[in-house]
Image (cartoon, rainbow, N blue to C red; front, side):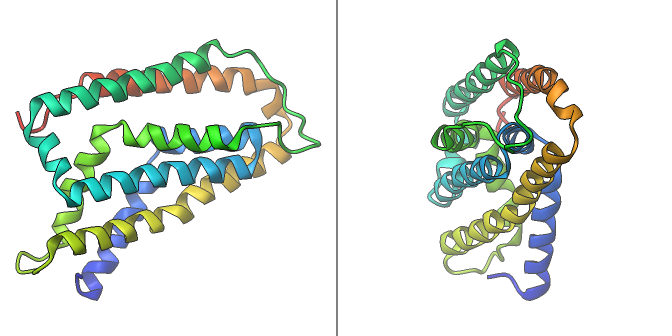
Length: 212
């Protein structure tokens, strides 16, 4: 493992990266706004579970294959882009569903929320490439078991992301309970979220293979 200063730097960098708004934060906040903090937390758990898939894959070399193989990168890239576009279009076409702010939540299938968060990350090759590019910077060249250290650092990164993601869920749920205008603009929130997901999907579709 890295020494203490390097480990603290790794944790700080991970928190900074997790605070940066992106598809993951948008998914957590949208679910928390619509269905309460529990749905936001479940969304965060799904996203972190997807990150673990990439950590294990990177440790055994799959991410290296994605970086080196144009075919592998392209296949996973288009699958991920199609999934993000599908989510965006669904939000754009969804009907307005007024929230019962006195009850706090609406009925929601938490397993579906978890599964979508999981798939959002698993089907994004940029997440795999991120772990492959970021984590090794904190592994000394003379480390005897680099794969094990990679797994441990990936575990630290993902566990440290939970307070940030849970925080987004709590803040969004707090706003839903206290800001009554949320009920009137929820329909437009769906539209805005849909446009953002479509944008993320198109951006991913146009991403070139870094190995080229």
